[in-house]
Length: 122
Length: 122
DNA sequence: CGGGATCCAAGTGGATACTG
DNA sequence: CAGTATCCACTTGGATCCCG
Image (cartoon, rainbow over all chains, first blue to last red):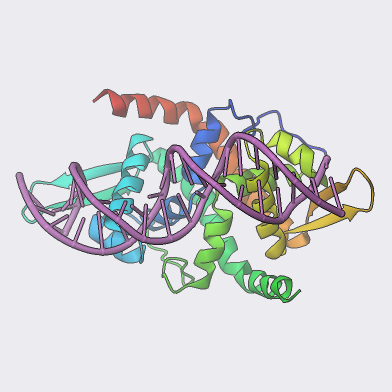
């Protein structure tokens, strides 16, 4: 199971999809998309659920996702303002892979922690 | 398709699996595991394939992966030294999900770039 | 409430030199 | 060759204040 070097290759520094990978292979992006997969969500709710993220970083994360066409931004002309974010079709294609990653983290964290302790014990 | 808030939850700052996610949802980790999925690989080859990574960062990435039990390190008592890295069983369970991410980046980069241009044009 | 602007602390990552 | 150690530039991200 080791001889299938694929014909696509994100590994070259010159490869543009590498920048794309850098964007999506990122903690906050993964978590944000995971939440947005559950449906349109307000900025504040997002911030609450991604507990620990700062407003600044959440804004930046969402801007980048919007820029890449993974998320749409819905602004309501109300006061106080309400802004909702929603995955685009393209965004949804990313939902499954990222969810798989989150699920992996959940399922294997116990084993990882054991390994980590063992390693640190040496 | 929006009502399945799962019972597991990497979103809480208190959740330990979040740290695990931070480790794996990372550009270099994703790329390193992608390469290692093709089989045992020397440090230098890894560095060459992950074109652009510095020795320091590659070492750190591999140490972390080793610490978490995703990779084993094989040192040969030769001179000049040879060190090979290999995915563990646990590491292999991560291979598929991460490969899916890399594949996504490849498949959708074109669309992303178009979106990006459109966004920047406003 | 959402988010822009500013400031600053801490972390990241590259370059280089050195070792077994 | 595969690191380790050091130094340093740059980025990241939090905190705070303000504005529509």
